[in-house]
Length: 479
Ligand code: NAD
Image (cartoon, rainbow, N blue to C red; front, side):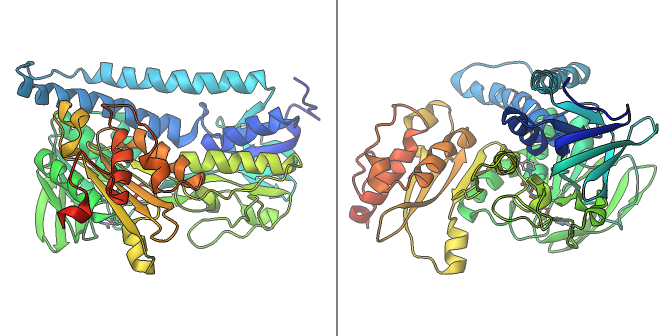
């Protein structure tokens, strides 16, 4: 390795990256590919951060199992019946771990090929030009000196201080660990994490209750999209309480006793409680003041469009710089930071960052939402294609989906898109590209989408907007 270690406990890097999640490893790899000598610091033994180890990837492996269980039930409509599934939790856990290990192992190999030195331990700033890293075995601290640093320290689940500390009260990490299938599971928080885990555990056989503070699940997402998911979840969960909160929780021998207040007051006793009420950035854990950096009260570190912090040679990317806390935002910010350090004129200026809930059905949206347009008084035209008229969707025995496109009434340019239905998350990418390319309604309606597919619903929603639809009556003729 070309690294010049002044001693075994001290390294110098052109670029030191704090955190090896999607933001951190992308920044490190891009900087190395641009000729920089890079040290990547990570507290956990495996690279990949929350996303690969205890987030996006293991949850998708479990959601796949849940989808198969539900599809096996649903295919009875076609005269195919299976016996109820038996679930070997050890094998399910091992299957999920295999997926994770394949990816984290791949990252380690890629780091080695790029001669990125990995230092394991908990890093803190010691000055504006060095990190002090405490190794996991508590051994002598390691000093990593740097010309530039990229902070990619991520976020952690929000804890509610009044809740008791008890192993039966878990976060997403605990839910993904799949210790058992609780008979009675309460999920506090009807956001994306809560609903993805409701999808998994209801399929595995838990009685799931969800309690959400706001008047709808996934607050902020358009109500017409969420309504479709809400209806499906109510068939699979026992109760979904909106505008309701947990007043108190007590850990007893019988279980976790919960008092609810708000719109649906009452009590319940649960084998496990998953708390999924948001994530908090880790900016407060890195002694940022030693580098002259300000961390706001919520734990965020401010950056400009080049990902540069207030200290010009220190950059930051991912969850710690602001919402949305999504891996695909972090990876793009990371490339910008590495490229700017290498002297490129890079800037983070996407028109949109898509969001996906990998529930069943999935919800995906990007660009302007109707909720936002109404709140901000932005004029728009809308094209909606119901999947009940999609041959492909009906072939899947699913008729609840919907594709919605919003256009500028004057220029006819695409402003936003929202989809709900199986595989919505796979379909949203086309609309993101269309928005970034400045596509208008005809660009979408005249693009020949393959038939029969779910992606043709995007072209058909554009046809609903420009009135050229033939698969349904054009909205204007109908009215
Ligand atoms: P979230 O902010 O998306 O949802 C939290 C929910 O909890 C909100 O609906 C909120 O109203 C509710 N809530 C807050 N306090 C409450 C209380 N005391 N009682 C009841 N409800 C309460 O947070 P999350 O689901 O924990 O996800 C955290 C982050 O991780 C988000 O930024 C999310 O975008 C990201 N994430 C993304 C994906 C994905 O892209 N598929 C998956 C998982 C997580």
